[in-house]
Image 1: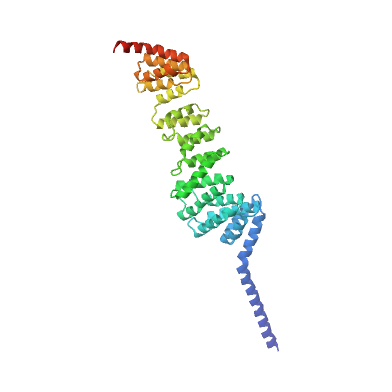
Image 2: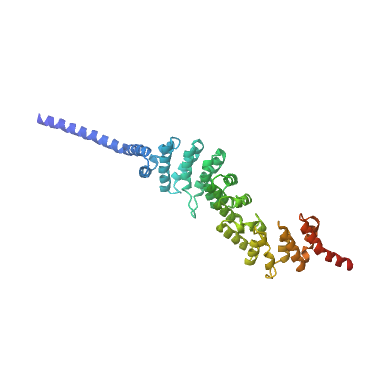
Length: 374
């Protein structure tokens, strides 16, 4: 009898062990999904410093949490922001050559047009993390990311312009951007140049000067921008570009209110071949005070390499009649024959009667001499 009971108990114990073992295996198999559920629950409710803590834990589970995080991008603002934190961590942990990074990029690009502005900015935050200065992004990942430029241009979401400009600049610097995306980059640059936000205008100026975008001619008006940081960026971009703005047209910025703009202007003029003496005269001749502009005449004889006729011709177009008269006098006293045509013109149609009279006064001896020597 005891043997029978012992046999039965053995089977009972064995059955219990089997049940417990099966439960343990099932628990182990379900452990990761349960852990993911718990971590995501905590992340969704997190705020402040707790967001980064739970974002790291969500990233520890790799793609286990990815589908849910992507879903959150189309939900309330807190869900979007917390999903963004986790996706940024996740994308940084995966190597850019990792197939999962490309898969994530494709997921984000497909979702992008259907998201609200907050969700779209979250997509940009992830994508921009793949671009590092001096370390080109893999071509396949860059090509997928570049599709955001076309989508942003189509959606016309002004809140996304700063991120789109940054991505466009990263892509253009990397090279190999298809023509259609270069077109999208130009559109973004034009939009940014007229933005109400100075920092966006600066970004647009930097993009406009990139090879392939080539919009420096549209940057020139920003030299008169009321915000000094924008003027600095514009001068740095167009100052060296002689094909975009003539040297004469740069000279007024030698008197900009901002010291850095003046310095950038002078550096650009030096790059164009002007000497220190040329720049000194240029600063005088563009001074807003006519009395200072007259000082140019005192320096023309001191510099042998200067074309006195060219500087005097410019002074004959000065807005102040006193300066124009002084230029006529200097031309005749210095016997600058190349200026005679301009003096004749001034005698005929200068808006100031005084200037016309002075031009005729200096021309009479010349005309008399010509009549006496047929």
